[in-house]
Image (cartoon, rainbow, N blue to C red):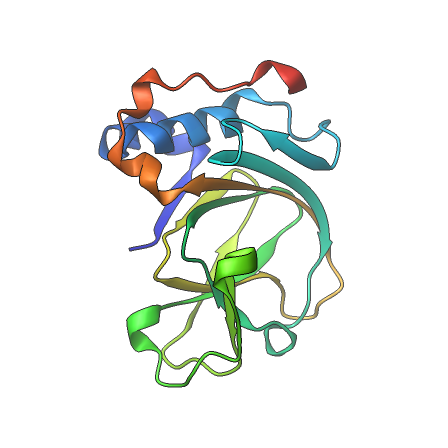
Length: 173
């Protein structure tokens, strides 16, 4: 159910997104992410927060596939480029290797079949739902530095009227 988007196409495509996803993409559009400090920023307490990160890419074989149970990920590259390796959890035919869903909201898998590469450049974003397996921050050679943002959204917010939620967007403006 993963969604791939691009900020440059947002105005034409936003009609297809749930209200809480509008809030996440509006954060990406209105925040000066290139000049923002690395860190975690509360948008709706523990239900929605942004993590601005600097990361070094690795070759895909060095990263395990992951999925989440509680949170939806909205990931965007701010500077640099990344490749994400993605698959649906329904494609999974091996047991979980590291199961930390209750403590840290992720499970890791060593081998996943039917994966494909998803190249991301600045302005492109991807939304991963809990059944979407993904290996972010990869590149063909590894060692590339990226600045990226991950917005974590409690999946229960998809069932609320996100238009009535007030996000704290002023802290980075």
